Length: 85
Image (cartoon, rainbow, N blue to C red; front, side):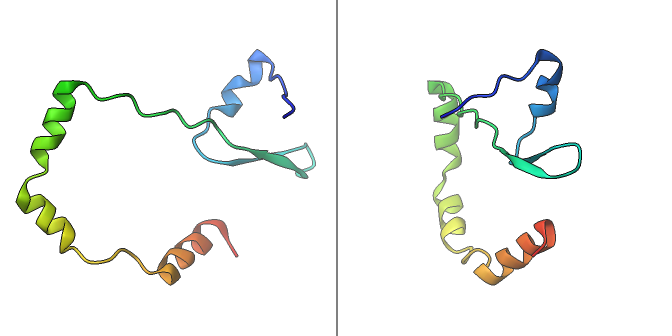
């Protein structure tokens, strides 16, 4: 893989949380920048115990009975509204 070193004065431009087009001054797309995903921190024992206590039988039953998520057609429609066709 090739690497491009970004000058210190431009680092702030790369502080984004989603894939971003990189364009030249004329607007021509040069490529895409995908930021590194920061891994979630490990849970402490206390945090794990707190999370485990939230998983009551009632919570789990409600989750199981909540039905399916959105249909693929709903997801595609949302993506088209957000990003265009």
